[in-house]
Image 1 (tube, rainbow, N blue to C red):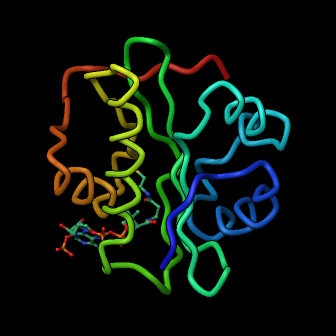
Image 2 (cartoon, rainbow, N blue to C red; image 1 turned 90 degrees about the horizontal axis):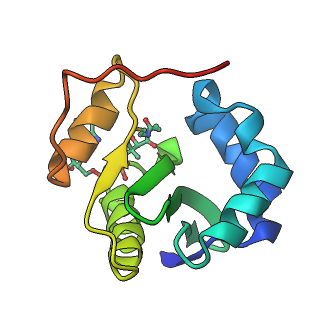
Length: 136
Ligand SMILES: CC(C)(COP(=O)(O)OP(=O)(O)OC[C@H]1O[C@@H](n2cnc3c(N)ncnc32)[C@H](O)[C@@H]1OP(=O)(O)O)[C@@H](O)C(=O)NCCC(=O)NCCS
């Protein structure tokens, strides 16, 4: 397995994988234009993992100057439970931390117990007293 930074040219392959791994989390913010803008704003933080030159895992990572965020943490179903997700998340978080960011926030659907167990395994604590609001 190879881990490297996400490139704009990965978009089609990544978006196809997200159709399998992350379909309900996809919205307008995942258009090619927005992902390219995200990568420009957060250079060198989003990562992919490859097996035989095929992308098998992704993480979008960045920060707003004070808090780090991770989106689309996803591993193709054929490659799960091999600690590939952990390796990718740790790499992204270390890159965010190297930019001087000490706080990380993650969003996870309330019925996504796999995702919750995953973030717990990385030392994240669930917050029960905050509501998440969207404008669309
Ligand atoms: C969540 C996801 C990224 C985990 O990727 P992964 O590479 O399989 O996870 P890892 O092998 O690194 O697992 C690390 C730890 O997370 C926990 N974990 C991961 N998958 C789990 C599952 N299905 N059930 C229970 N615990 C799980 C375990 O503690 C695991 O450690 P262990 O295998 O030593 O017990 C993957 O299941 C996925 O892509 N799911 C769909 C997208 C998604 O829900 N992403 C998270 C959004 S918040």
